[in-house]
Image (tube, rainbow, N blue to C red; front, side, top):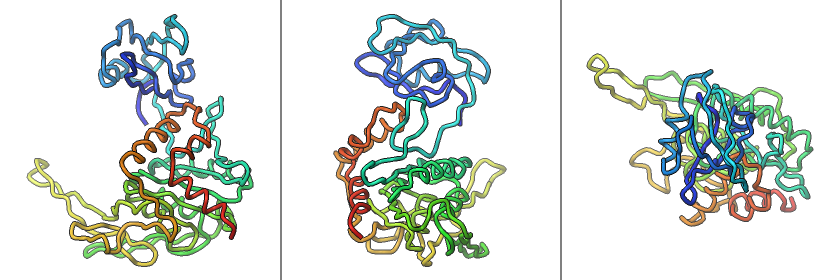
Amino acid sequence: EFVGIGIHVHPVGGRLEVLAPLPQSPAYRAGVRSGDTLMEVDGKAVAGLSPGEVGKLLAGPVGRAVTLGVRHVGSEVTEKFEIVRETVQVPTVTGVTRTPEASWIYLLDADSKIAYVRITHFSRNTASEMQAALAAVRELNPSGLILDVRSNPGGLLDSAIAIADMFLESGRIVSMDGRKVPERSWTAKPGTEIPSTVPLTILINRQSASASEVLSAALQDNQRARIVGERSWGKGSVQTVIQMEDGKSAMKLTTASYLRPNGVNIHRFPDSKKEDKWGVLPDDGGLVELDKEQWIAWSKMRDGVEGFTGQTPPAEMLAGDLQLTKALELLKAPK
């Protein structure tokens, strides 16, 4: 979360274009939309300024208004919007695209009734957001579900454990072990948000790390999900920061490691080799590695979807996403 009005701008052809107003943010409610051109902030022209410089003009305390001069797409008239800054909550659970009312659509393939949910990172709100998303998915009576944690850097372990428990009736989720740390483990409780009869595929890539690896490993080892994509980052260490010299310096020590349910260490240590066991590997038939150009294309497509423009249909998502296409193909394959 942050204090602001909830827009992101980027330079396009010498002008500053609104890439994405966050749904239900002050800017969104005022009528600012994706593709609009930002002309001025509090009477100051922004032509030639960088997005960072504009960000400083937009910054301010909660409750204080800022006036934007904005031109809508196709218009030459600059409209004025007085917008009051608020604490804006950034969603961490997203879907395929948005409705005009800014709610997420989770149905990826209407013919096969396969749903799609993405977790961008794990915050204190992610578990409750996921519960709401899965409630909407249940209404679709899906034949399969794709859970996307690609480029998810992690976050709160408790959120990852809670989400793993939404798919598992029983079994170990993760454990922690270290030389000076008591061994501890987390186990799934009875009851799920999605029936175990609904096949689950998880998408990971080389930037899926930490809590996203804990979630993926838990569902893979308990035979609840199939993994598709690339080998994950390998970040499974518990680190402790020790203050030194009255706070003038600090030493960070790795004091424990997270172990997946099968007992294998998730962490990739400096001397770890490619053939060693670390991180999360795709299942047989699920490896889809992207080259540089494919990675850039996927990143642009993903930014468009998460820009909350509501303009990226499923067909366009699949056309630019080889890993998502593979996950859909595997779920649709005859059992």
